[in-house]
Image (cartoon, rainbow, N blue to C red; front, side, top):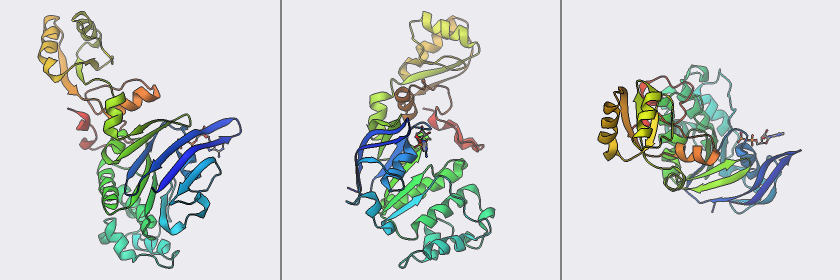
Length: 319
Ligand code: ADP
């Protein structure tokens, strides 16, 4: 076991940031902490690595946080901006210089896919390359545990995928990864297990598939009707109970029910832009567990990254 945390508590004055959190992370696992802003994710990471005090029992590699050999852990904080006028190679070499037995910077650059950009200034790298360079700076000490706080926030979809492949490759090589994210598709894609934090409590813990099974709800048919109100009424009259309304109306149903649904709409004289079938996703489980309401729509129910402009951002959730 790499991380073992039991009943972790932390207050800031009146604010309860962590309210009795217990979980463990096994060697070689990718464990993702998810949760809304203010849920306590950063505080938990800080408690695990001894940069903030907390009550409870925490051990990392069998030791209290402040006694863990720093070389065994790589930590990439959310806010990490290296100097613009360092080349990728200089950035990695700079961090390698902090360790007596650091890895060869060239090998680290190759691992993060930047061998060809070694001489490029950090400011001239793409968003995804920048982030990979930052991950590279955490790999110089060949960490057994890598902690990534929101690693893909603000990165375009191509860059995110490259980072996912990098993280998977590290885990395949035996690195234990703890990552926070607020992209549910990221947790679903990468994590062996997910812990959902809300208001300082771990409200769900399991594999993405388990959480979807337990909390994701039913599969649904999603209809984008020309007149959403009339579409919703027609579906209600036909005995369906819409779970999501508005521009896209969702009803719990199997794909086999699509013809019957389409027929009901035709009978009621309602045109539609599209009909799709969607299986529940981690996003639905998250919405149920955090009470943020069900997502719907023909597009991916997940939050789209801010810089997502290319076409591969949207259709993923389509079933
Ligand atoms: P997350 O990373 O999930 O967004 P945080 O761990 O940053 O959550 O915050 C959890 C709660 O603790 C929030 O209510 C936040 O305002 C509060 N908090 C975090 N850090 C501090 C701090 N240094 N001083 C006071 N309150 C804090």
